[in-house]
Amino acid sequence: MATIDLYLVRHGQTYLNKYHRIQGWSDSPLTDKGIADAKRAGQRLANIPFAAAYASDTNRAQTTAKHILAANTALTPADLQVTPALREENFGYFEGLDTGFTWHTLGTPVGLDSFDAMIHDLTIEKTKDMFKAQDPWHDAEDNAEFWARVQPGLDAIVNAASDGSSVVVATHSTTIRSITSKFSDIDVSIPVDNGSITKLTVTDGHYSVDYYNNTDGAL
Image (cartoon, rainbow, N blue to C red; front, side, top):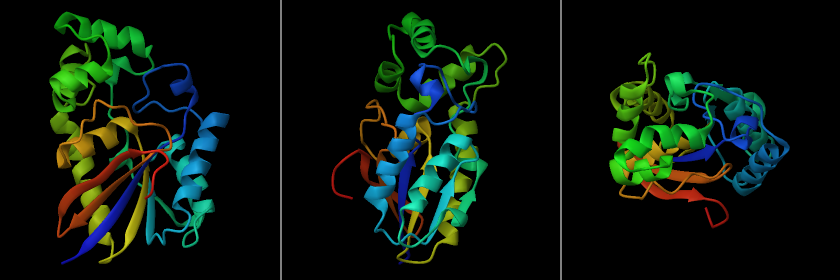
């Protein structure tokens, strides 16, 4: 049986995170705190002999990955591979808007006033569908569109890896939440912290989640 370990790292804090703006396919640089988030993740992962490293094609994910690889004993920033498949959810019309205002506007009609509450009560899958339905341009990704992009990207990373190898992926909050929800019973209404680590084990194409949103525990 072929077994691969995937370490998913949420990028460090960005300026849009700091300003509480929705940031899906939109992008902004890491703050000083965000660089520290990335470096802290790098130190925690430094001694894992990664066989490959990936990031989504956003600046925030690539910068995070390069800080992680700068501390790694097996790879360097030059080894980073970039894939648009692991971008954040596309929030369409709602990109760049104030998070509190947007979650309140979309969630209050169904009795929910935060993104976390919507995920908890509706599921993260149905929350994506709601964003699509409420987007006047219908550019936001629904759950089916999201997974049509993400799953082939995950599978390509796994298929390129050798049995017993470990791979690090710098990606995004809702992407990590969605992956965790699909392959486990973990409560993903708990937010993903910047720089946190989520670990998956993939055995003969079967995905399982070992831990979620690990910020300071053993890896």
